[in-house]
Length: 472
Image 1 (tube, rainbow, N blue to C red):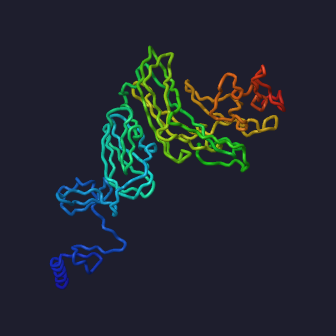
Image 2: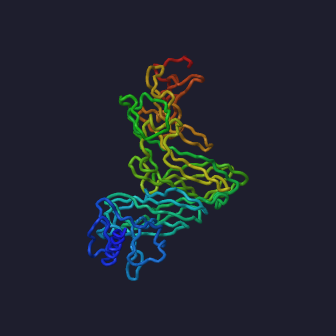
Image 3: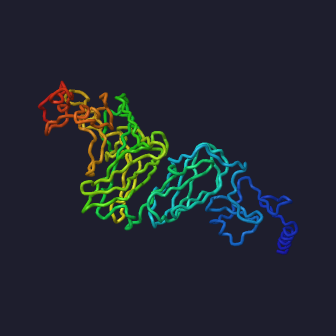
C-alpha cells in the first residue's frame, strides 16, 4: 500500500512539473500539453446544438455544431465563433450552372398559419470543389438556411433547410445566388402556400364548388415487343416487359409538357349568380427517374382570375413546365398501364375546391395508352386487326373517356396515321371515324371499316370478315 501511494504521488508531481499528458504514447511532444496517439481512433469533439449553447466561450475553444454540421472555433480579435472549418485549399467555390427548373421543395407545399419544416434542393453542374459561404434569408415567414460547405467536383446539389410559418397564400419564390450563378425572377424556385383551412383567402366564393380529384394524362411510350399483350395485374411501372422476344411494330411516342403549356378544364358547380374565382397556382416537381432525359422538372397548374356562372361552369387552367420542357418517361405497354389502368403518377398539384378552404388534388399521369379489348388477339378474319391504343381523358363531367372512337386510324398502331394524341380535325376526318359495331356482338372484326369520305356511306366494311356470328 505504501509503495502504491508513493508511485501515485510521483506521477502527479510529474504531471504538475512538466504539464504534459500523453494518451497511448509514453513521450508526448514537448510543445504539447496533451498528445493523442492512435492509428485507428479519432478525437471526438463536444457536439452542441449550436454556438449559443456555450454560455461563456473562450478563445481557443473548438466544438462540433450540430445545426450547421461542421467544426467551429472561437477565435479572432475581437474573439468570436468562426464559420464552418472546411476545405484546405482556400479555393472560392464556383459552379458552371444552376438547374433552376430542377430545384424542388420537400414537402412541395405549405399552409398559411401552419409550421413548415422542409428542404429546398438546387442541382448544379460543374462544381470546382471550392468553398461556398453560409446563407440565410427569410421570405413570407419562411427562413432559408444554407450552412457553409464545399461544392463537389462536378455535378451535385446544395440543400437549404426551410423552416417557419408562412403568412400569405399563393406562390412564395426565393432567389438563389451561389457559386457565381443565380436562379431569380421567373426562374426562382417557388413553393405553393395554401390558404389556411377555413380561411381560403378569397380564392372561391361560396357559390362555386370545383370538382375533386382531377387528372390529366400524358401519352408517352416506347415498345416494339408488346404482343401478346397481357392484362396487367400489378401497379404501373417504368420497367420493360418483353412479351415474346419477337419484334412488333414500334410504338414511339414522346409525351411532353412545354413551357407554353396545355389548357385544361376543371368542372364547377355554380349556384345563384355565380362569382369571381381568384387566381391560383400550384407547383410540383417531377423527379428525374420519371423523365425521359433524366432531368427533374417543375410543372405548374395555374389559373387566372375568372368569373363563373351557371352557363360558364368550368375553370380554364394551364399546366406548363418551368424552365426546360417536361419529357415524360416513355413507358412499356405491358408494364406502364397498371392494374388500375391509370398509368404512372408523375406528380400532383393541390387546389381549393370550396369556400371552406378544403383542398383536393390534380394528378399528372404518364401512360402508354389504353389497349383495345381485342389488342393482340386474332379476329374472325384470322388477323391481328385490333391493335388500337387510346388515351384516357377526363371530361368536364368528371368521367373518364377515350380520346378517339373505337377503331379510329389514329389509334391503330399498324396504320400510317397512328398518333396516340391526335383527335379529329373535322367532322369528316376519316382517320377519326372508327368502327360500326353490331349491337350485342363483340368486336371480332365485323365492325371494322375502311373509311372513305368520297363514299356516300363514309366507308365500307373490310373484306374477309365473317358476318352473322354472335358472340357467346
